[in-house]
Image 1 (cartoon, rainbow, N blue to C red):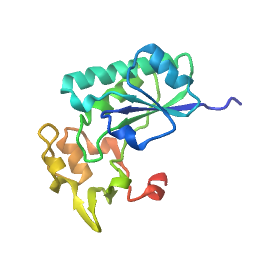
Image 2: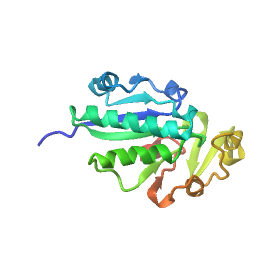
Image 3: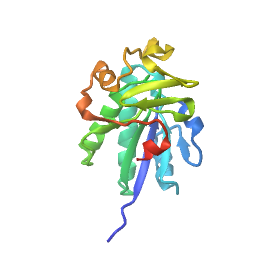
Image 4: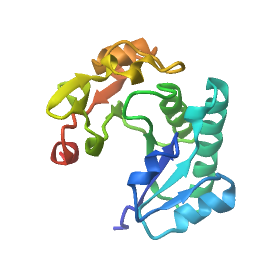
Length: 192
């Protein structure tokens, strides 16, 4: 029986995210040669910095689609089972659900089988951004502050009004039933 080979491709919407990751390839272009280097790398995953958080919606959609189309094209030569991750802001800013929708659409259009529901897991445990019982918090010492009560929720472009993730998904124009909300207070819970 042939071994299933996996490759995780992380689309990162902002350059600050990669600063906590090490031991993998980060590419900042998504031309064929660059993406091919990611697939050829010995590590089981690589990052593509899209910087879409700094873009208007239309440009973010175009770039996400371009990246996905190139990843799919290059993977034809590798035949990996793909895990595609949208690495966005742990304070809930970014083009959500636009980017995950485009990722899913591209995969489906090219015949990939995708999970029925998209996992939604905002967390940056080292910085105290955790999800407990479907509510996203920021730790301040021992105190848990719902992120909707922080300055991040008042962002000029990506404002929101709730820390309850089902309600956040609805507020952003998506159906919460299309997502699996992953609680993450620590890495043990996240791994489980």
